[in-house]
Each structure stands twice: as C-alpha cells, then as structure tokens.
Amino acid sequence: MAAMDEEYEEDGWINRNNQPVAAGAGVAGIVGGGGGGGAEEEADGHDEPLENPQEVLGECLSKFATNDYIMEPGIFAQLKRYFQAGGTPEQVINQLSANYTAVAQMANLLAEWLILAGVRVTDVQAMVENHLKDMILKTFDPKKADKIFTEEGETPAWLTEMIEHHTWRSLIYRLAEEYPDCLMLNFTIKLISDAGFQSEITSISTAAQQIEVFSRVLKTAIAKFLNHPDDGATAIQECAKMVCHGQHTYVYSQVLIQVLSQEPKGGFIMKRLAQEITKYALKNNHNVTPITMALNSARHPQACEALTSMLTRNALNPADITVLYRNYSSPEPPPIDLIRNPQFLDLLVDSLFKVGVKINQEHKAKYIYLLAYAASVCETPGKKGQPKGHRNTNKDELKPTIQAVEKVHTICNVNRGSTELIAEISTLYNCIRFPVVGVGVIRWVENTVTEPSYFKLCTESCPLHLALLDEVACVHSSLHDQILRLLIQLFESKQDELEILVQLEMKKMLLDRMVNLLARGCV
Image 1: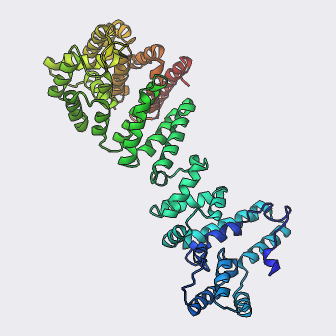
Image 2 (image 1 turned 90 degrees about the vertical axis):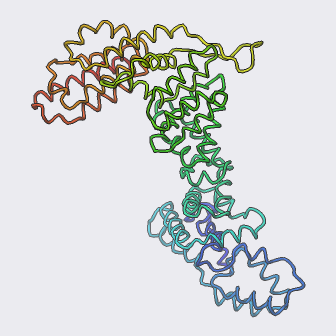
C-alpha cells in the first residue's frame, strides 16, 4: 500500500504536486462511472449513535467493494464508521485490497514509461489531462455534482485547487455551457471570476447566469474597448454581442453604460458605445427601441412617443416629424440626446440625400431642421443656481447648418450627371465643411455610384462624384472609415459589362482615391 502514496520528485513526469490524477480524484465522485461517493462520504462521517450497526456495516462494506475505493476522499470517514459499528480489520483490508485496481497509479506508471521512452514531460501531462477531460465530459452527472456540492457544506478543497490550473478551468467552462442549471458549476464559475480569471470566460451564456460574473466580464469588455482604440470595431462587436445575449443582460448593461455616460470624463465615449450596442441589436432584429427611449426620455413622453413610433417601423412620417419639430423648436426643448439616435439620424440622412426620395414640401423644412439641430446644437449642464435639470443650449451653428443642408439637398435630390454638377461644385465644396453635409454627400455618392450602369455611362477618368469624396476626406477625418468602405466596395464589385482595359483604369482610379485617403491620415 505504501507504493500507492509514492510521490515523484521534481524530476518526475509532472514536476509539481498537482498531478492530473489528483485533480481528477476530486471529480471522480461526480462522474457517472466513478467509483464511489467522493465528498458524499465525508458528509456521512459524523457520529450517529442511533444508526443500526448491521446497516452501517453493510453500507460500508458495499462501498469498500467498489473499484479503487481506497482512493476516495471519504475513505477515512467510512473506516471510522465501520470500526465504530464493530467491523473487523481483516475484513476491510481484504475488501479494499481485492478491489484495488490502481487506475491512478497505472496512469502514473505509464506516464513514467513514456518519459523514459523519450516523450516530453509536458506532452505526457497534456495526454493524461486531455484524456481525463474527455472522460469527465462524457460521463458528467450534474445531479450527482449538485448533491455532493450541497452536502459538502463548504467549498471542497479539490475544487479550489482545480481552478488554479487553466486545463481544469477550461473544462469547467465547457461543462457550464452544456449544463447551465448545475449549481456546482455556476458556483465554480463565480469562484473563477473571484480569482481574477474572468477574461477567460468567453461563453456569454456562462457569464450571463450570475450578475457578479457578468459584471466582471462586462467590465473587462469595456476596458478592452477603452484601452485598444486601434481595434475599436472588434472590441465594440464583442461587447455588443455579449450585451445582446438576452433581455436581462441588455437592460442591465445599457443602464450601467447610461450611468457612466453621465460622467464628465469619458462620458461621450460611453454614449458612443451605448449607441453602437443599440445599432448591433437592431441589426440582429432585436426590438430595443422601448428600452432606448425609456433611458433617454422619461420626462418628455410626447417626443418619446413620436420617435418610438418611427423607430419601431424604421420609417419616417410627417405627423411624428411635426411633433418632434414642435418640441425642438419650443423655448424648452427635450434633451438633444433623444434625437441623436443613430437609427433616426440614418433615416433623416436617407430621406434628404438619396436621389429620388420624395418629401412633402410642406414638411421638408422640418426634416432639415431636426437633422441640423441634432448635428449642430450643443448642450451643457446648468450652472449652480439654475433649476435642476436645466440645460444651456448653444444654437450658434444651427442656422448656417440648416442653410447648408438645404442647399446640398436641392442638388442631391435630383439625378444629375457630372457635367451638370460642375456648375454646383463651388456650392458643394463650401457646404461640405459641415460634418452633417459630409455624411450626406457620402450617402448620396454611394447611392449614385453603386448603380449598375454608372461606370458604364461614365466617361471621365475620375468621376466628379468620387472627386467629392476627396474633399470630404480632406476636411473630415472622422469620415475616413465610411469613405474607405465605399471605395473597397466599388473596388471589389464586378463590372463584367466593361471592357478589361476600362475595368483596369477604374480600379487604378479607385486606388488613387485610397492613396489620397492614406495621405490624409487614414490608417
């Protein structure tokens, strides 16, 4: 029996005391094919003088008869019960010896042989651990795991030891995803999060089970977004995917981000993140408009109702636009954040800058006013002494922005060729300095040049529409990404109706536009 307790020295196959088999011994009791009761027996190890000695002996002997029971954590508690009930040493020794198959020791012996044969220690360890992981995944019993966990009364020592090693943490993640209702696994996920390994929890369903775990994972995702601006698109995508896992995760996250957006330092970044998450949710057909409105407009039900109506249908209508116009042209307008909704702004830009979109002339000025208001008006919190909730509004740029949007709308709303546009080039260049006009021009150019027949009918070496993008890139660095996406889309588009040489000239011209973007600082 002494051989069974042998530990290898530092030059052995493990090089540390946390042998794979030792970690597995703790979970043996929760694996369907395991030998005995694991921690269950420890719970039964208390003195119970009222128990029938014969029943105790029978129960103990039946456990001793299972394979490798001597390796179970509860062996000493059961031996104590057995001897207190009058059991004989000879019988228990024979029983344990006869049923000792030495599975764990054979694994260690085979590992030693592999090392002697020239296999690297790390490879052998990975072999044993992966095999044990596969066995646990095949035979794991969540009900038995929960039973052992609840009867234990405290965190098992073997569980605390397991989560210190990445191999077993990854096993817990897989099991938790497969058995989301298992109490023991959910508790273990919390232990892992408490230990500081929340960045490893990539499964959203696993993190969303507990608010503490989800909060830490959300914090890690937001920190990644803030600390890696160069990879912002990927970070936003990952964060939005996690937040949109379910209704409860969406509401909780957006409320939290909304609170952070009120902070004077970094608040605008949080607001941008909230908008990107909303955009992701809408793209994936989640109706989150009521939640968005509830977070931004509780004190302005009329404006909220009008905006909600349009966002839910994803279409503008004159009646709701009139309600919003009336509210935002009043002496005490609602917060500007309400109409700085990305979905609403996209609808306004499309209605004003897409070729052929018809707007009732009676209401066109209201569309232009709302877009210009959202783009140019600046709000600041009220100073001390002013009523609570009061906001100071700066409308200095509102009138010139309205005039610029109106002029460019008149040009863009009619389908014109490059020759006809030459007369308007001065007006376009003067108005493009307004950011909202720059966005509108990109939308107009995109709508025009993606027509299948555009390049077929175009005779210029560089169409005027694309030359306008150069000017937008020159004055608005924040729009570089939109321009680049459009140029890439055109470069990759099939122009089979054009001759090969014409196609090559077109691609060369698009590459020139990309080089110009690069020269303007687009990276």
